[in-house]
Image (cartoon, rainbow, N blue to C red):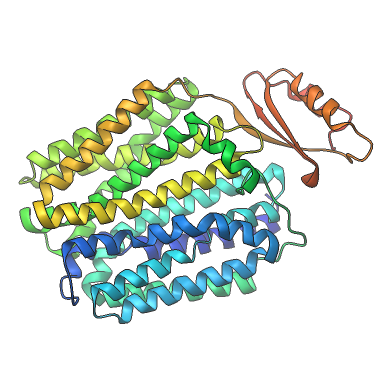
Length: 452
């Protein structure tokens, strides 16, 4: 990336990461530290953890589309203001209902899709993959940090302090957006990063993509249910003080991350993604089943949590890549928008359902529910075909004024390794699905209508 691109992407990654940190660092300790709130029940506490997911699911695609009309930065600023106001509402509330409203308002600042569109505006096609990877790494790091510092900050400052710090993060994000992030000179709809209204119906008819949407919904249902149940086990069964939960997560997160890397390589390089996907879901189900029956030993619980996070990291890294492979050319942004919506629906349902189960039946039934959800997902994976190994490829075209678009599409489709083609005249670009191992890049570059 150029220096300008690197500066812009780093600033956007910082905004994305601060927002993730604020949303997630309350999760490991909320069930243990919210009992003093008026009206507290375990059901409502679970709802509070997942409430942000409902508003995010409802608003993130509309935010992206509105940003095409009114600009990226205005929508991001509005989203960060709502995120900050939700954090303040939660910080100053003395009832569980106020915190639920605050979490819902936090999620209504659903700017993820707008940030992705802004990345596309400020980077070239050649740099975009690196830019998206930078954002992804930042989000992953922020989530990992949140698990470690959440319990520590909760012990020092309480829930009020954590929500107050989250509001401060929103303020820092606003300053970064206003003074550091550049304003794009021209607004362009990028089909590889944004949802396009006209393609939503076609994406919803793609059964391969629907399987992946169901998968990420289940993954995040189980993640939020994990934080509804496991902190209680650490405190009540293993007698680990809340402030020391940080050390459990710190000792798990890094080893689990490195343990999953070989399996990512096996899945991608040897084209065994279906097997890796199924194995990860099975491993997660086994870890939760063992935790349900054996949670009196710290060593055993640590190992089960390690297995869970190893599988979670593997799935969280693999599923977006599979969405990119399975969608049609020019539909990646729409497919990813619906995928993210499914993810947030899962977060909401995970908190709401796990809280109800915890209140009426206890911790072990929550874990059993998690296992059941994962086994249903495993059955779906077993029945799915091997995923495609094609990748998305954006090609800038020369002026289309004197070129027959149908002939351009046929010429591109005839190149070895090109599997699907969509021409978008408004962007002066061709979106391709290609098999990288078979692609004849030299022939592609020499076509007369390809921009130099």
